[in-house]
Length: 428
Image 1 (tube, rainbow, N blue to C red):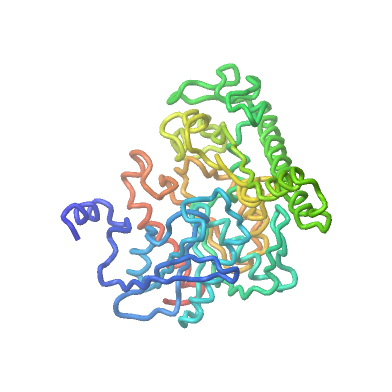
Image 2: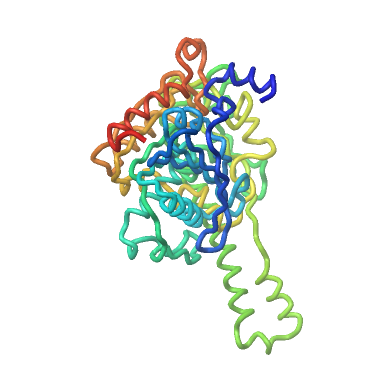
């Protein structure tokens, strides 16, 4: 370990860089039943072979170096961080196919002799693992057989070992539900990124906006209508996606039709090109949640702004990159559509009946108290608990002067979840 790395580990004792060098690491390559490949790293304490593994995956994030690994391995747990087939690229992400990746990882853990598996869903991993557990807990013939875009995704024959416990840490309600909060409803044309209706622009001073870092103030009646218009825009994007998929299906059908050979040369060429055309949706203005700038909306210890934009979220709303900026139609419907995605945690958590712990970081800019209360209320578990990590942000860093006075939030997380796990399934 270099001097620089050692110094950083001292300053960030619960960062991944603090991992004990004696912890064993096994790199694992996995094939899903649809032949897609993924990989992960299994971490095990040096001098013991635990029978409990903690499982991690995010839809697109790198979770083989997750910050819980040092703390959990120090407490005697094995930790398996698996990266999905869509690592760092969700342009064509189909959430239902992610379940095949998780199933491959869960089967592998069982083959290694792990008797108990704790599903730890962090951030977008919370809704993903809730989606998986909800499907794994169903009788096979009741599982999903299609994606929101209409593709077959037959889970009825998939071997899907379930988790024994479910822990959601700083988990949002699903990428689609998250998108509903941040879609800019003032957009009037999906083909013109500058189009807007000033009456529904959260960055319009007439609606209560004040230049960052001064807090804004939005009237609640305006906010309620704004939320409805966000749903309306989501449905509009769904309609575009379904139109593209229907067009593609039509021309593919024509290409395979017996009458294709009877068409004129020019028509055959047109049909063949359209049958092979891969459409993309370019979706602008996806960082427009009034709660970013009005701290009286679902109050918490969060600072103003969003983790997705430096300073004023208007930068992220109009700037390069951004959430769901370029999507295939099927990817939009399955992942980022709040009106079509099946990975909706308030819905799926109803079918998660294993003991459930929800951990909310109350300095999180992008996840809010009412959402966590909704998860607790809709959880299908008899044994369920909501715990709060005060003065911690989304990545479990301290927030403000109050946060600096407390122990590292990541240390507090380990101290919170380990006793909860052991009370239910014993020591590792």
